[in-house]
Image 1: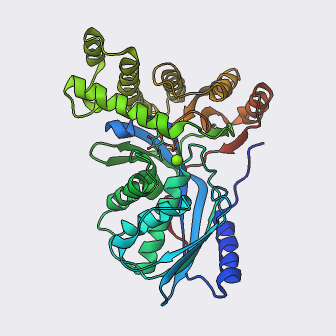
Image 2: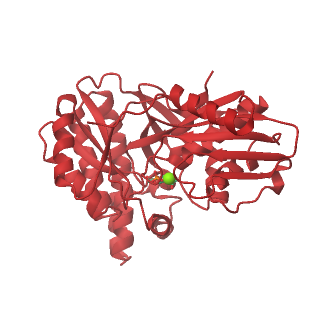
Image 3: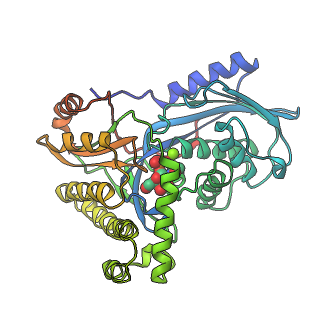
Amino acid sequence: MATLLPHVNSVKEKALQIFAEKFGEQAVVCVYAPGRVNLIGEHTDYNDGFVLPMALPMVTVIVGKSHNDKKTRIFSLSNVVGDINEFEFKAGNQADIKPGEPKWANYIKGCIANFICDVPAFNAVIVSTVPAGAGLSSSAALEVATYTFLETLSGKKPEKPELKALACQKAEHDFAGVPCGIMDQFISTMGKEGYALLLDCRDLITKQISMLHLDNYVFLITNSNTPHKLSSSAYCERRDCCYEAAKILGKKSLRDANMNDILVLISQNVSESIVKKARHVVTEIQRTLNAAVALQKSDFQQFGRLMNESHDSLRDDYEVSSKELDSLVSAAREVDGVLGSRLTGAGFGGCTVTLLRKDAVDKTIQHMKAKYSGTPTFYIATPSGGAREIS
Ligand code: NG1
Ligand code: MG
């Protein structure tokens, strides 16, 4: 059986109750932001390419209230925080906020520092159902929830939602030290119930792609429960390879490259590793566009094939898979009714996503459990809405 996720309202109730116990008053601001699963378009966002994620019913909820003294106090129930689950710092001037310990608070501090104006001191409680380190974007959920909280607290919003996503990405770059692309913050901000989001990471143009006609099909997320170790250094290495390849080709980014350019790289004796990384990005950008068309045409067979090709390219060319992810993907593909399966997120651990017939879900879960050496967790990926205030 797939794991049932608690409804956002029950997460909110829990956060409100803890806030009242902790701070002796009622919270007045309640917001949430979702995690996401990327259906296809992996490691393309920082190459100005296309991605196709959808927001999930996994959420990070923040409840709180502003006050007149000088300190902002945050209490987190997330499983990532470790021993220090409470944190306080001096509120006031944004320019004075600096990253430090504990690490989890940097996402929050980064959003306050990048918000459109100074905000008053506040107390807040954070409760999340987005698993951390699983490639489902717990970090973006925390950033976008924080930014949404600040919007509600201050009554001020940036002119366009794009600016909100960009401010959250900047928080991740400057305060968490992760040079991520723009996909996660965008989908957590712009997700729409019943839709996946085709995002052009170059000019930030978006297209909502309906998932309402999936009918007999569904996307299943499988968490390998192997955290993505190595991932931040390997992520930077991959990104640098892509930038290097673009530079050699005299292009602004690999978005502007095609298969001919891959031949150019080969003819110039560029290292095999760089050629393979570039080839993944060039082919993955095309696959993502083809997948969006297939989804619109209800050609689920084709969508599944593209997912399979994406995984194989991530494994062989981009070299970001792991034996655990490969084993889950192979097991899923063995089941009748499964159309495609791939790793999702940065790789090296975390989750896979599988497109399959609804009536094949139970037997697929059984088969994947039987074939996998670890203990996986399963979730049905229902396309959900983006961040908002919860009344
Ligand atoms: P995950 O693995 O979900 O953290 C990372 C990046 C994305 C994108 C994907 C690969 C972060 C926070 N996000 O996602 O921007 O590049 O890898 O497609 O690092
Ligand atoms: Mg992450």
